[in-house]
Length: 405
Image (cartoon, rainbow, N blue to C red; front, side):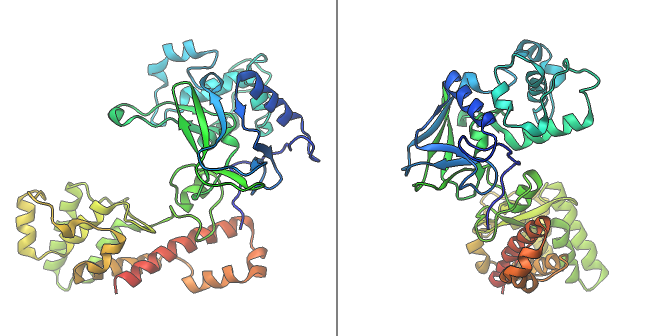
């Protein structure tokens, strides 16, 4: 089943039945600003999973350059025409997401008649062409800001820090023309590379003629994709998919094994200690991927503390949870799960069973829906995507059941 595009694209490539003006204008702008598109690729709606995308005109080999975007063509708080104002007000514009300066840059440039990015904005007709002065009351509205935030969430890129810069604040988000045309797959065939002078999209797999070029929006589970972009990858395509086991569900599973009040009190003591170690929390979740446990340390420590004998727990607690040598049993990967102590496996299994009870339907019901093409086609788009999210999660959880037998 096809993966949906991040946003609806309404213009078509030159020569199509759709209005070619926005794309022709954008491609002309690319030439003016030095944004080099390989002759082997084309912006097109034909042959893409949905809306606009980029398609190979000719076969492309790994390592070949698809396009290069000079840094001067990037739209950011540093390249926009009000960069000086944004820099002076940097302290007042700080936010957890770091998006505020870019939102203001976008808002200004979209309203500036002479903005050098105007042809770029022409590919976003859903935002409209703002002709009013900046921050005019007629323009300043919750809906406008909602659209701009959605745009930045879906289309901005964040340059990764170098290894020696790990202690620094994350780089500011920026808009990368051409790169935001590409759709997403977990098994993507192109990757964005950063250099001091430009950003380069490079093929990382062979791309046959006529096939779409896919970037990645990051290692995102289906629930994240549907939350951020409105689509999910069909099973088993999303190799980054995950399933959550709520931390309090593990506590509930452990409580099921207690028989007397003293055992329940000791279990709550263990839980409080795990909270102190910052391994668990009332709102947290253990995240299980298809090949690894993403919260390996937290889950291993939780199983260890909740399952260890009372006397051993007292000693462990006296040491504040720290030991000189980390035991091999503290390591937890998917392939290690069958080797865990029986008590650990049982607690994990009980937690999975409780998690599966939170779904309104079972795995067989999902499988029957997916295998019946007519019934599946009759579902709404939202129902299809929700089904893909649930099915992928349940497959991970059922694999855990197999591993914990």
